[in-house]
Length: 210
Image (tube, rainbow, N blue to C red; front, side, top):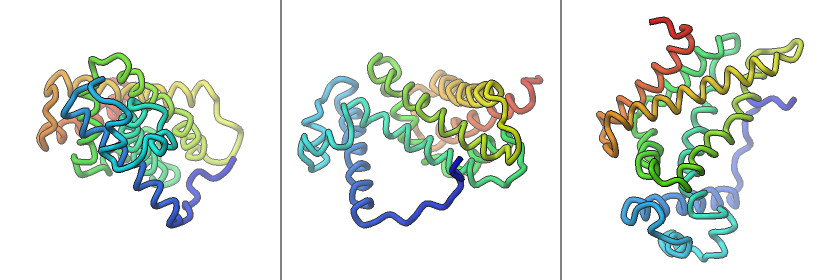
């Protein structure tokens, strides 16, 4: 298996431009989600707000919902990167918790939390958000395999159960946060969300002992 911790090569100018365009599309989609609500805008409006053509939009995303879901995917990507940077030999659940602690600035969570709150009651967008979490699973499993080190292949049931539990803890933390704060994404609210994410992994690590 390829070493998932192998440093990534610096992005070329073309790759930097593509990343910037992708981010501009996501930002435009979020702006329209704020102003018009779920289902209240079109791909054409996103493209216009991002300063690109409709055709260019579809080079990056298949739908408006996918563009919005990319905000959640970006946060999960950051969390995975932090997980991969944890020391070898550290227990997996400790690494998962420390990865969330490393996202020290609550504003890392701001866009993800806002998307979660704005799309929670819209079935189509909620489905894309759920897919964003599901699509992250295989990468987390690969990272966990690497963290277990050389030797016989780890038990697949163990890996999938562990990763599934970690992802479920993340979703539970988001649900509890929303029940407390609703659409509030103030710094105090985001600080609480960060702590809920950390505490949820702590419960799992400690075997849910009260």
